[in-house]
Length: 180
Image (tube, rainbow, N blue to C red; front, side):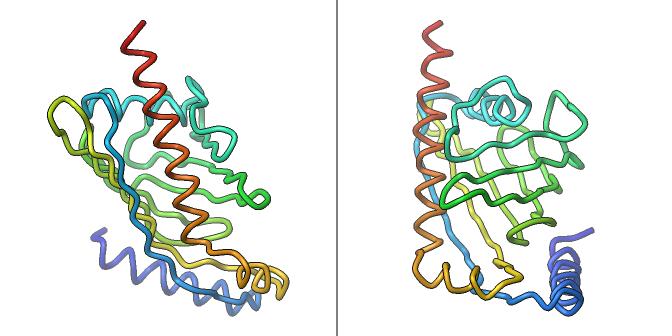
């Protein structure tokens, strides 16, 4: 399935869900966060896999992910259950839909507090890695309270704070592994 077909399928599914459950759709978010990590892309990519397969917990206490079916490696088709621990607990599920090992991974958020796409890029730069994360989602809430709360929270900033916390934890993790 190409990216365009997936976007159309996601949009149709979202409209159907909203009609079935009378969900209020809020703002669409398209946020990009970048960082330079002090390790080669293969090490950074492995560290990301370590985080969702239970080997490490460098992104806690803000974010945790668990790969379904106790898989030992993220691959196309893998589903990751995610909990974001910022301003309460937001739960989502994401399916890996594209991957080029050590370079790129694309996930489709299909269940939970938001629906959309996440893209990870890993670019080598002088023995380090430029990590770029794009979060392109639509938030969904089934209550007026959820909508009101978001009026007082800059969700794009909250998302970036969680990702930047993750980047710092990732850098500490790969540095510690390198020094072992």
